[in-house]
Image 1 (cartoon, rainbow, N blue to C red):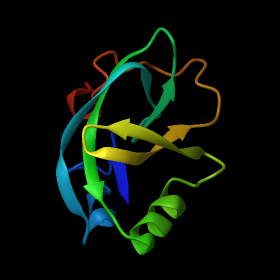
Image 2 (image 1 turned 135 degrees about the horizontal axis):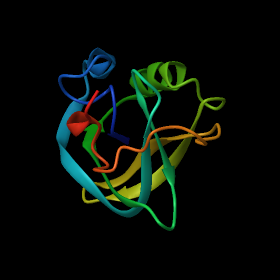
Image 3 (image 1 turned 120 degrees about the horizontal axis):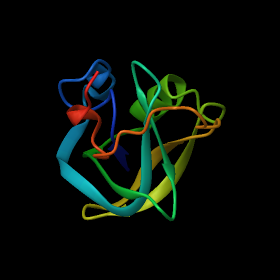
Image 4 (image 1 turned 90 degrees about the vertical axis):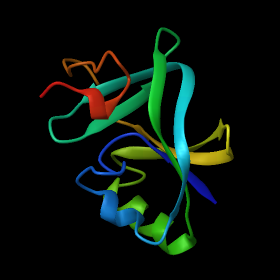
Length: 116
């Protein structure tokens, strides 16, 4: 199975260690339709008809890694896990569940290009 990651799980970011043992398939730009918000030390993405692209990476993972990611993302409370299409095939993505009112938008759609 595959997962698309867009925040602290990306290569070089704080939680990248959770993907130890996964195979990085490559970078990915998801098409228009996403909004990325800063929650301080990590991001949350939602789908939005007015949204833009979302930048991230796709990994091949096993069930143990998926279970660890579910724990990290507090699925299904803080994030929902949804299947999407990528250039590498179907993949899971974690989308933010709570309200995004008053959260700052990361206009670029790329967590790694944020300005803290």
